[in-house]
Structures are given as structure tokens and as C-alpha cells.
Image (tube, rainbow, N blue to C red):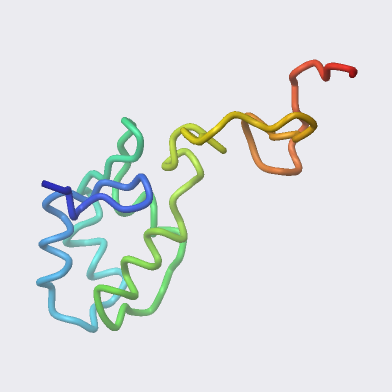
Length: 114
């Protein structure tokens, strides 16, 4: 059975149910007062709701969808686990795929010459 509280590497757990059933709109400060200490799991690491959306300083959230969007926007790339991972086919001959990091980061592997 799929886990509906996990999205894009972020595990909200029981907090998702609480936030979905909350009365909206809800102010940013009120939300953090009630749920700020709740833990959210990201690829084996945990942080709090306040740790993720605290820096936003929004006035209020109109609905759960808006709040969920804010959470997904603010999570770091650590939530995705292995970067650029694919269980698909290996690179074709002559194809240059980056193993780790963002596209503009230096590739630390030694390049092979053909």
C-alpha cells in the first residue's frame, strides 16, 4: 500500500492529516505555534516544520495545498536522496551524464579520453 504522506522525498507522516484537517486560512505564526515542533523526515534526516517554512514569514496560508507548496519549495535538495540517480539504462557510448550534484557543479570524476 503506497504511503500518501510521502512526496518528493519528504515524509509528513501524521502531520499531513493534522494539516489537511486544519481550518484555513491560518496565519503563519499561528501555524508554527501549533505545529512548528512537529518533525518531518527527509531521506533519513529529520527537521521541524518551523525549520522548513519558518524563514518564509508568510502572512497566512489559504489552504493545505498552499502550505504543502511552501513546504516543498523550502526543502533542501537533501530530501531527494541520491542526486541524478536513475535505475534506467547506463549512458550510451559518447553520452556524458553527471553522477552527482547540480548540472553546473564540477564533476570530480576523471574524464576518460577516447
